[in-house]
Amino acid sequence: DGGITQSPKYLFRKEGQNVTLSCEQNLNHDAMYWYRQDPGQGLRLIYYSQIVNDFQKGDIAEGYSVSREKKESFPLTVTSAQKNPTAFYLCASSIDGFTYEQYFGPGTRLTVT
Amino acid sequence: ELKVEQNPLFLSMQEGKNYTIYCNYSTTSDRLYWYRQDPGKSLESLFVLLSNGAVKQEGRLMASLDTKARLSTLHITAAVHDLSATYFCAVDAPNNNAGNMLTFGGGTRLMVKP
Image (cartoon, rainbow over all chains, first blue to last red; front, side):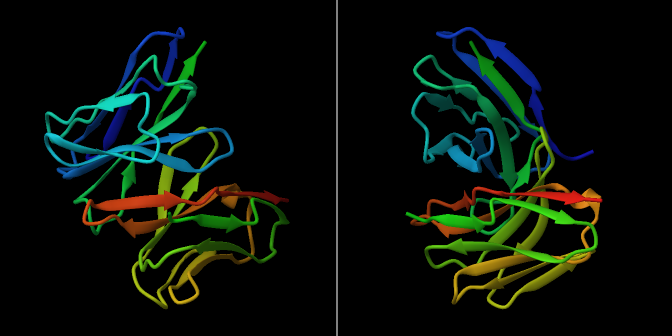
């Protein structure tokens, strides 16, 4: 089955630790995105990538880092510099970065204490 | 900066009733998406609206887009409990050729009561 996978579903970390969230897609999509969702809120864009080895900051990139070494994979690292990292993180992909709708993965719920 | 506002933020309605959710946005765009989110779950694509006057219908939901008014509506006809969820609109904003960036509204939490 084609789709987007994110792992793990739930993640718990201590404050001060970096943590990496996985996002993989087998849809052959060029573009991938990371969003953050806080309770009762909409989604906010963290980073996006239109092509391998290239990515751009979104609206709330501070405290996060990404890489895009393979077309299928777009991992997100939440660093200790992110002041309030507890949130629901959603990865998405689209055929290209310009004209097509985005499809979302199942999400990772990160709790930092 | 593109702003996307939905209203109402919360909607409680009886089964069988009709209602409309509104999505207003602040800058020119002719691409708008509606998504559904169940509690604790990801987003499911409902409608893709790609031009002024576009209307799409699926079951009891119908979405429309008026790009001149910068307004999209999601109309619910004869609501049933299974439609209880949070609904998001998202507007596609061209970003100086940097690609397709979606700006999301805050969501409308719909609760349909028997």
